[in-house]
Length: 141
Image (cartoon, rainbow, N blue to C red; front, side):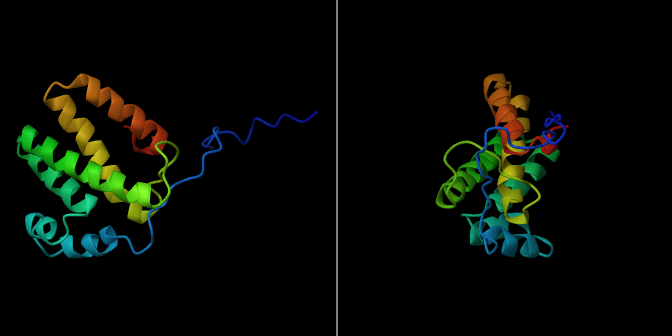
């Protein structure tokens, strides 16, 4: 009998389908706007955008403003969860970064983990690391 385990690397062993945000998700537009506009202005125009909030979190972390980064990342995380649920996500399974509209949520998720770690919330940082591992393990460093 042939060994059928050689194709298991990188596959979804639970059989839970990937969740992909719609191709016209707001973050597609926001990504283009962020090339020329201030992230704070973009977030004000598109508060539903996880990417806008993730970008603000990244900037705050770079400036050592860890609590502000946490707040921005938490907002992006929750806005992303709302969008994922509308797209059929049921609280588990892959959310591939290879699908561009998913990237804003995933960036917010990673920023939330980093900000949590920086403010000493190790329980949350560990929970986020587990979430990232399930969503798209290629995002782990």
